[in-house]
Length: 355
Image (cartoon, rainbow, N blue to C red):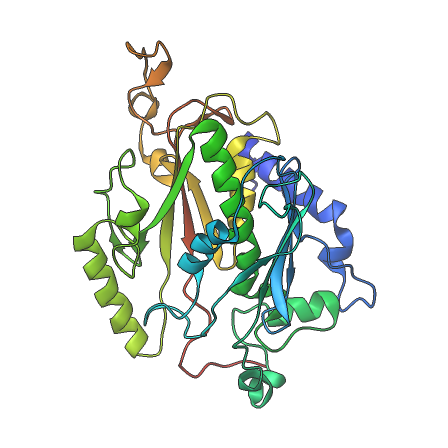
């Protein structure tokens, strides 16, 4: 029995083959003695490079492309880092870190950006490497962690804390994101917010993407602005956590006041860039924009976003936003709406088999 591939299937297969052939060293090497550690930089005009290991001296980011003459304080960056900081509640990692940021370069004494690279450092204080080195984790691969794949690629790995594969790497992204947040707000009035929209099978669909605020998100430890659903999420998390296990969920991100015209065909589509950024976050396993996979259940008539002219601004608008603010890979002026699925935390308190 033979099967013919559709155009979409052929495109997907061709893209995978292209990736494998262009990176054939990575695809087929096993414990190569010469494998370079690339892949730590994202962006072009506004470009970040994160660095540091979970149990090293610290983690941080070098940000290139920030415009000059923008007032920037350490406290502004610290606000976002404090929201990310571990140990804030019983449902987060217990690691106790202050995550105090140090801005090492890129500002003048008056706290104004120079247009030169901005380096930001957060020193590690509570790394307990003995928790990894004085037991079987010193020689065994942890299931669904990056231990085995890092060992296969580099022939060496950071046993304590997972090194670059640790979610602690995201400190650099958050610090750079705080600067990006200020630039976008300053020049375009763009506001970017995110919240937990689903935990296992418990989901909220009652959040108004035009009006919810960061205060709404931060009003509970689950960070779901729907209080009733947040309580159910917390109950489920506690139930699973007490059994020594973990569960996953979905984060919804909304960008408001995004102008039309961002993104370029073909390989630089806006949702393609967003997907790459989001899928590089540790534990991310799925990405959707607009209606995403649920859109496949609709007909074209039901899924299409019909246009109208805004009587106040004269702008072309859509009556619905099933496209998630992106059509043809280019922003259309509506809210950008994306969702990222995160797998259950791999570190659990139950026995597992490994090698």
